[in-house]
Length: 418
Image 1: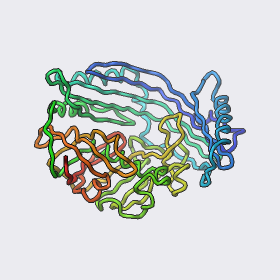
Image 2 (image 1 turned 45 degrees about the horizontal axis):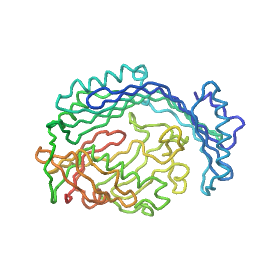
Image 3 (image 1 turned 120 degrees about the vertical axis):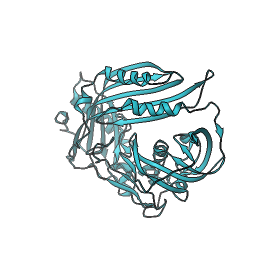
Image 4 (image 1 turned 90 degrees about the vertical axis):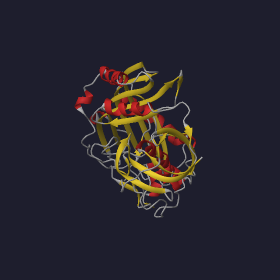
């Protein structure tokens, strides 16, 4: 598709084109509720005029042809640039040319049709106990994206991605308990349903309608699912737009000890077989591994061209959707394993984390689901995420697993539950 992107006549511009086949299914109330299949194609153009950045995106109208759609988007992006605020630190578009990474595209997955997601969904339901209420989804994306700019930067990537989500609660006297869940993402292979969903269903069988409320100080073990939630929340503090605008507790702390010495966090978009590995980011900046925290010391931030250039960290400019401009994002976020961890209370999920405050790190969350001595319990934790990965940290497990695009070992902390 790269050869179809004609930049002739364009000035100080970047063109992004994506085309994907998307197949999805959704399970609700232990039934296959809906299916969808279609093609999604988009064009996005960004231009710079005297330091002012303009962006415009649109669906790709095949009847017009790609060149015509690019020209129209270019004209609209120029209009946006004229009324935009000047970015004094704008570095210009990169001239890098990147090479595709192995493992981002699977011929086997690319050949699948809607029957694939139907079969995966049915297998989830087939192994679920009748006492459980199952929710979930299966998605398959097959396609390619292209980024090219007038400075010579260009990159094309074909990719496949299979995603699965499963959640289960238990039916008790006509009511439903809270749910336990898991998520799976891979570029090359579907999940083994019996292992992926089967574990969740076994955990769901232990759930109670009214679990005992536990209070007091405990050694709490967050399993990888809960750790992934915490790391996703923590990642907000590393995004360049938050750091630059003073909305991160890590603003001005580069090179300082902000976490426990056992805490090392990295992001590697070049990881072979990683769920979010890419040869270039979606701004045509060559992918490079990055250590964010080394032994508790802040070493780097996650930046795109717009914000990251002000801090000196770029290469993490990705689009939350094809119609949005690039923004800072992690790829394969990895908490490095250590010597081991265990706890009296085991936590698989956190309820209420979406209400936490990234600007301070403060949170008040329900540990749910959680178990003590194998029994389903519930507790509330009022804490700061920097304390969890700082003075309260007791251990990090020897092994970890992927939860979406976060690689997380289990983590033990000593914390007061209320």
